[in-house]
Length: 201
Ligand SMILES: O=C(O)CCC(=O)C(=O)O
Ligand SMILES: [Fe+2]
Image (cartoon, rainbow, N blue to C red):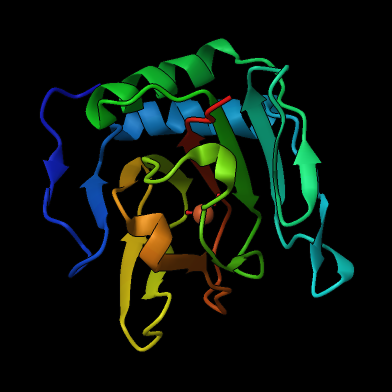
């Protein structure tokens, strides 16, 4: 939405994948506006996933939006998308312009406080194709986003995802690197994250 973004434009990863961070991709005013919409108008739910043969509740709230005829799933669950809303389309358009990619779906995560989290994973479902571009937008409290090499787990990178920021993951990132949002004991408010994806149906 801004013409020039305060961006490092430099790859956060040393090799085998790309991750680019854009600080203040959205202005403070835009972010405050989207925060209110996201909090009040998204159909948030706490859903179970399968982990090591057991069903457990995810430690955060989630929602999926996109083409309702194209479901998407991970960790043994399948989600049916809700149809796009106007303000989600506005966010999507801004992100698509920067990413030079068209997205079909957005997965939303609401971390209510520092006890909510997302464990180590790669976004490598078959339906995303070989080297997917995933665009991740954050609003609300800053949380650490950690990346570590899948084969050499000592190799780690961390970036603080701030209010109004954009993170683009590209190339071989989902093949060679996993990522997580760890729990934190810092007293923190909520954070909402949107990951835009292109599902190849
Ligand atoms: O909350 C985040 O920044 C990460 C979200 C994520 O990795 C995902 O939805 O796959
Ligand atoms: Fe992810």
